[in-house]
Length: 126
Figure (cartoon, rainbow, N blue to C red):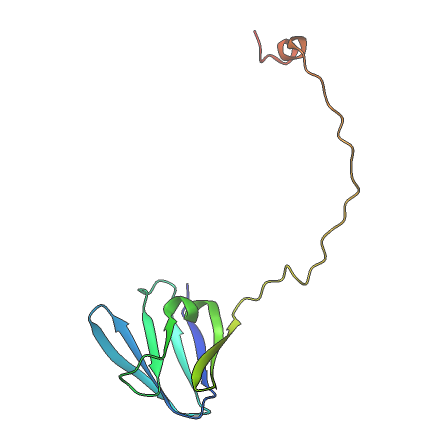
């Protein structure tokens, strides 16, 4: 399957430092300035990873996983009362809520009686 792109939007009043952790190792991914966006490419076959974000490179205020990047096309980070909040926009919105359920007339089921004579006739009982 082809890689997909996810947009990380920073609507906070400060720059966010994004790091990726895998095992014992951490690496800087990006610094997202306030009001800016950063696009990440993710493949469904990639190893699971956790991306930590914070106002300081050593602080992990927020965790976004590679599963989140696969499921959501846009992740918007906002700041509310000094704490980070995440809004996620689905990549493939569910259509079931938009479709009206089909209304079928209630059919009365007739009970079919079975006997050993019918089973012999169709060859299942010898």
